[in-house]
Amino acid sequence: MKRIILFILFFLWTSQTAHAEFDLQMAIDQAKPGEVVHIPAGRYQGNFTVNKSIKLLGKKGVELYSQNTEPALKIDHTSNVSIENLMISAKNKGIVVNEAEKLKLRAIEIKDVQVGIYIQRSKHIQIFENKVVGNQLHYAEKGNGVAVFKSEDIAIEHNAIDFVQDGIYVEEVRQINVRENEVTNSRYGTHFMYSSDVKVLFNSYLHNVTGLMIMMTTDLEIASNTVSNHNDFNSYGLLMYDSQQAKISKNSFRNNRIGVALQKCSVIQIQENRFQMNQTALEGTKVDNDSIINDNQFTGNILTARSDQQGLRLVRNFYDDYRGIDVAGDGFGDVPYVAVSSFGQWMVRQPVYQFFVASPSVMILTSLDQQVNKTEQNLLVDNEPRLISHTKEKAFSINILQFIIGLVICMSGFWLWKRGVLV
Image (cartoon, rainbow, N blue to C red):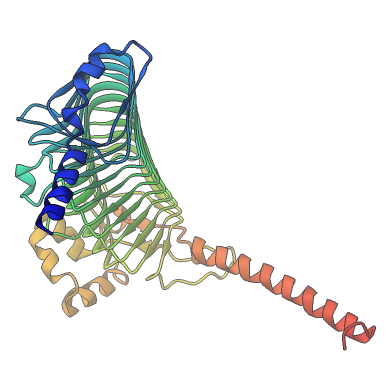
């Protein structure tokens, strides 16, 4: 029996140490440009470097792990490289890319690292279908899931990132598409600095400190994302600082301390979004007059909006706490909606007041704000509040269609019964 156990242990050990028979770095060095290096299943320890146009393709069960604080895999000064189907673990950085072009990283699982993927001075990079899991340390002791610096034409799509500092960190990058990723349990889901031509589409940001942090960035499209459950003391669904020319549309901001905050921003359009169950849906500070918030839905929020003296332009939004009527029957209220809140203005100056946000006295004060004319009311007023939300309109149209189909079926059945076809 003891021999059988020893034989099994020996077999398992040898099957997991394929690196003893297969020298990965030698295979990389000997490969000709354009060749595919097939990596047998097993664990490979080292700091591997790719500096030629090849493809590394791992089989199921291939793992690279670094033997020191150097990256497990480095791609340096090359082009037309593809890395697929690997597991990587490292004491510091998993993958480092420096001055590369036309690189594809796909189906790579990176775990137990400080930084998952680190890219600098590169162009035409595709980061698809990867998984990065950090550690349980404090955010200050972690690195980023995917970090991109001084690069151009970057696509980061279909990745899952968890327990890192910033899920996706972008600095000085032009033309980047962040699409259909899921970032959870991190500090910032996605963090942009000094970048331009940015698209953030169909991503899911859940349970981070802040979902999206945008700073000193221009020309953005942020659309169809789910941004939920960012409700710590300093949390935001989306925070934009000193940014210009952005369209924020068709997103869901749900259960955040603040849904969207704009600070020192210009030419921002917030359109057709859903703000649900946030403490404060919108916050604006030093927002220019060319920015507009239109055709959004505000439901279940404690405060709709708060701002400084410049205010925010609200146009044709739906508010579940609007009490006006529609005599003309055009779907818009005849009385303006007043979003200003005295308590909300105080919260801008003293954020600690948020602890009293749902108290009875604050609710009474907010109700009085809707009834009493104030000099600040022109700052947060929607003169054409929408009475029917987009959701209700869609549901209504579907119900009408169902009714017509049902009526046709019933009449057809009755006709067939009269003809004697149905007994």
